[in-house]
Length: 390
Image 1 (tube, rainbow, N blue to C red):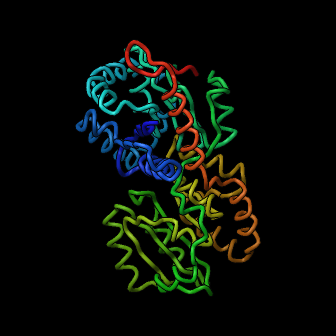
Image 2: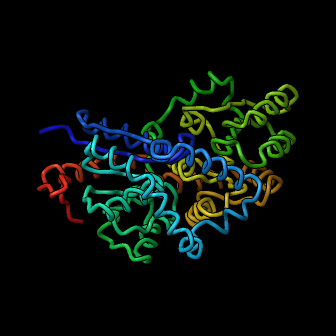
Image 3: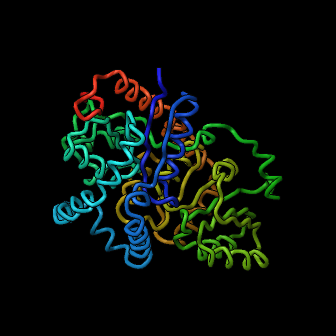
């Protein structure tokens, strides 16, 4: 039998959507070494200028006017008003998409972000294509932009997300509750002693990991300054991401810090730092959240982005795996409470391990290969695409 062919689409290389796609790609190759996987930034491929504009605009809004993003996110009124514009963008990009699908002839297309999912769904509808299309959610609550007629299946991270999709009219048979795909190394137990030695840290003091996403957002300077003043030995491991100004400030502060302080920029092996940590202070991005849960790492949530991160926060609070701080000073107070009562952290750690889905990428890969195999065996339509029913 010829190799199965899978196309994975995301947007923005510096995003959780990309990391999720890479995790699925790795799991697909592990499950079937002969599979042909293509992983693409859909916007960079079809319209690189638009992709650059959208990425910069999004970061600008999040940093300067998050209340604007809160209004735009999952707003039915906004969705109705931009529907025609979205259709025009999809039509403009359809030529490149047609060439891509014609060249690769995938037996399944899976998208980890709603924009490429909508692009392929509209293309299928306009051109009467039947290639199976799967939407893979990387946050703990679906939003309206995922609701598309020509999506054959959805992968969601939780039972709550599945229920919300069903309440929005998606048939239960189109939903798979498999988790958020993360690097399989998060499922493995790391060598904490070796990692401590490499970072020149000790096992005598609590280790707090501080992250602000790939862009190093949030009140990290204030947090580090306040935690440095706590009257109890700590170890702070701070990931600045792509925020070069923050990284420079942290390295200068390091020279006069009272607490042990380790500083990193863009790091690839996040699992190493989560393996080491006793507590994570972070923004609740979908991938960061799923990774922390897989490692059984309790969280303090600070300054969640309105919209998807607010929904993620609510999921974490409902499952008692995180607490939400109102600003950096409140986060510092919570750290003091955890130091006084380590049992609180242990209870949250146990609950996080119960909720986490470290093998999500493998489960998703298995299902995608099943869909691709069904498509490969199905009769082809007049357009040359496999005719697969939902």
